[in-house]
Length: 305
Length: 315
Image 1 (tube, chains in turn orange, blue):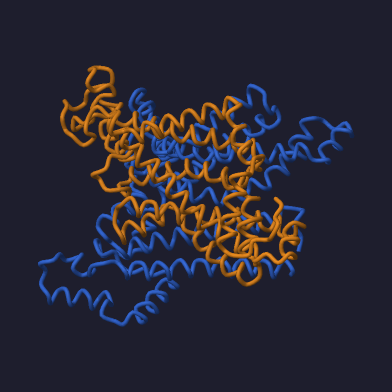
Image 2 (spheres, one colour):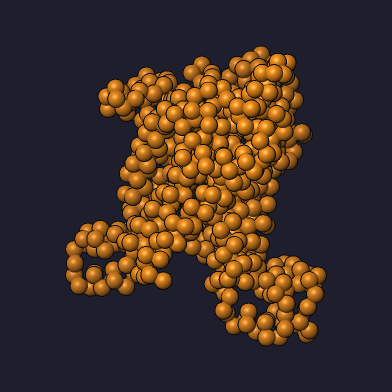
């Protein structure tokens, strides 16, 4: 990075940051590198496949996911009309799985995205300024950390009720502390590096340094963390739906379908097993890709992964 | 800062966190839309009865009086009475804690028994076929919700082979064997999930240790290979793994709750779900505070233990 004039304003800082990330051929190369190994390829193809099915669910789905238009308890492969069979109400399982995938992905990516942005900002500020700011912010992060997702779910659902936004809120609050710790750790590791001191010496403002120099240096760990936590968020969403604490009952989700199928597990196992497999395949794909990213960015396994 | 100072500071932090959690909880619960008296008695109840209930719940007092009374109640371990059964919340929770703790402890034991051998093999034979298999299996463990594992186990061992009971819990007072047979399936399901996380950690920690100079020195001295591996290697590799123990509790807890539902076990998980649908706020509060307290204290103990056994940290 060479600059004629150091950018001073807030806006220039953001522009410079975006350019750095975009032009940072190392980061892009590392991402490209993931698809040269079997693990990365398998993960990548699974994730892309499931994302496409979810996005195009209205086109791909042969039935309305909520319509009670078939005979109940049809087993998979018995009729061409319901390839994966029907549930206890006679709803088409394949169509419900496609729509359920949308909820899983939206919540997984949405919740992790919120946690990543808020958590990283808190962590960077905490690590960059240190002292009292660090103490106060980290006590706040400790308090968040003491609330496992289940406890947050109990609180938020019993107070505000069930909705997509509330589920995203639960999961993102649960993961803010993880991103904050990563952001803080990365800043502490580079805070005394010469290029940071140099940036300070040529008169760059704190915001420019944080966005232009500090953030691009932690792209790798954050991308890796983001992928792994997306998989975890999908698992948490499915557990919430399974417990009846997820999004409203009017929306098909994998966890809820699994919960419904549990009552018929001995006689019509496919109602519970198919959504279970959907969850496993999706999170397995994301985890494999996340691990491929971890390898190519050379991020050390942290104690919580 | 001496060791004493460090320990005191950590205890003060832990208590501060618990205090913050309870205060947030108080504010949260009080901001619930709707009058608890209406929720309990129903919309058409006698106004005099409602007034009486508000009086007995202390809802007519100013908010700061309620806060002080609530906090001092918590200090004494008094979380009030269930709105539904009118039993003290503490009794309700402690009456149901045995199955939940049983599942969590057995799950942890299973996780450790899976994770340590698998992690060592995987690290010692890095990139071998054994490593690939262990790694792939651990990825499935990481990617599979424990309630789904539970349903699969239920289908196989209770449904197909009819070896184990599918529903219910036998207290430990009825004998070890009936107790174990009633919780072994949910504990295995929870243990597989935690074991996968733990195994990844053992593997990466072991790999770090294997590259240390002292391992090479031990080898150069001509010490027995197994001795090196278990005495010098494993002992050091398990130090960072310990920190995970406390954190896994949070994950294990979530898993246990879903598994209680799968296996029809009457524990804290079912109590929570029931209380949410009944809007039984004193019980919800009690469970949340106890979970947060146990979680914070467990991690405090783990951290202090970590400081005590890690020769690199000295105050």
